[in-house]
Structure formats: C-alpha cells, structure tokens
Length: 231
Ligand SMILES: [Zn+2]
Image (cartoon, rainbow, N blue to C red; front, side):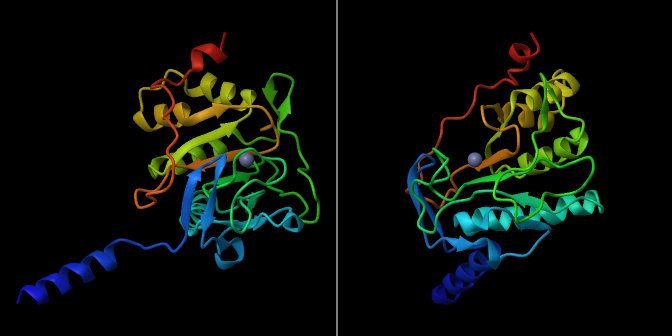
C-alpha cells in the first residue's frame, strides 16, 4: 500500500516537473555546462547567427525557454521576424572569445526586434546593425515590440538580467519609468544598461533551483534606476 502511494507520488512529480538533462555549474563569468545541448535540437521562431564561432550550446533549460518565447512573441506579432541569436556558450561552457560571461549556459545574445522586420543575413560573421543613434535608439529599433518581448521574458520569473544599451534603457524609462505596474517595474529593474549592447541585448537566466552547483548573482537593487538615466 505504502509502496503504491510512493510510486504514485513519484509519477505525479515526474509528469508535472519538466526535467532537463544539462546543468549550469559555477558563475556566469567563471563556470561550465554539463551535458549542454545544441541550438539545433530545438525548433521555434528563431535562427542562429555566427555559426562558425561554434558557440551554439547552452543548457536545455535556456533553449527551451528561448524556443517557447520565440513562438509566444510570434503569437503576439504574427509578422515578427525570427529571433536572431548570437553567441551562446561553448559545448562544455567556460571562457569564449569576446565575452566575460556566457560560461555556464545561462547567457544568450539576441538581436533587438526591428521596425522593418528584416533580420540580418545569416552568413554575416558580425552584427549587421547598430540600434543607437546619438543618445537615442535608432529608428529601426521597434520600441513597443522589444518592450513587450522583455516583459514576456521577465514574466516567466526566470530572468536574472537583460543587458541593453543605455539608449534602450533610457527610452523605456522615458515611456514607463513612472509605472505602477509590478511587471513593468520588474522589467525595468532587471534591465541593466551596459557597454557593447548597441547591436543586441543579452538575456541572462537565474540559476534554476535544481542547479545546486550554479552560483547565484546578487539581484539588482529594488529600483528601476530610471532617475539616474533621465538626468
Ligand atoms: Zn552577451
């Protein structure tokens, strides 16, 4: 009898919690990935840039999230271009060229959504477009689509940071800085203005609870920090 109950409980847990095979180990800037998966094992409304660099791996936890989010944004905007993915991680994680982080399979670079809905040529070995013009975002950065994409990502509760250019964060601060909406507040809070994000944003997931060897990053202050940017 007890045995049957234990088996039943086990089955319920097995079917309700999705299990992932990969594991993020260590920190974003000093870590590795165990049993990483390739971007090619997932389908969705996305495409991979810079294939020749070989950074096509990550945790299945991150890739599953990206694949689902790409379909969700397409549901909201049926004519949206495929999410264009830049560097992820190396097969076993660890240090890769051009990046401090991207080491434990929880970081991914993605091109901002465009007004002209036309992604860059997949054969281009570099980012094709700068989305900053002076102190502002360029005309081709789709402000509302990116905002809704970011909110969608943050709503999952899985996001640790979204690194963007100063101009992007300022634009969203101008539009939503005095928001009373908890999701909008949290989206601005997790958006971190950082160098080298004029061409793409960088999504970072929090350590998943089951990743016992993943080192957590301390959360940002409980503020949008918009007032500093809007000075
Ligand atoms: Zn990055």
